[in-house]
Image (cartoon, rainbow, N blue to C red):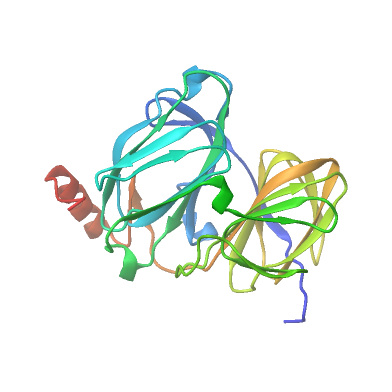
Length: 289
């Protein structure tokens, strides 16, 4: 591959209204059928409302097995509690990275009954060899997220992975995972153009949550407005520019696992038999050890 090949948009998705937990209204950007397109990622949800009735029920105690959940809070406060005794208060700019592994039972409950609640939850698959590892949990305050001011005026928040920038290599607080996740939150000023290296072996996508961008691909330019996700094709660079009102967007990339994906609600394994075992373990009180 030449030294620099810009990635193109190969698919555009529009988030669909959904409900989860105890009636929390959200937008499901992707998830469910044909999940292999986003390998190693399984789902991306955006939640956000000024109406407490849309979120106050929260996500009461529920199980997970076989993957990781990443909650990134933009506004509002959410409390995590799990069967291992972990408690973490998610506040604006903070991140919760939870590895369900062989099993975790947790809750995520709003710590407010008015005002704005806004954020994202990303599901990251685990390879078969790691699905039954012990559960773990990381609570990262906003101050732990790596921030970089861009030469043209915008800001980059690096949650996971490594990125080579003009000032050198920057690392996010989450690293060393076999799926090599790269998770960025970009805040761009009007008409700002940025070019970011993203390794050719990673699957990548962009989700615009405010404003508009244009992706400058190898074959075409593709506009993406707020509420749209662009799944990207092959290449080793992402070049984009913000619209006249600026933009805020997520850049998410990871190493595909290339393994079967069998999901039943909060359990993601490699076979139907493993799903049935997870259901038995949860029913018999063994899932969380």
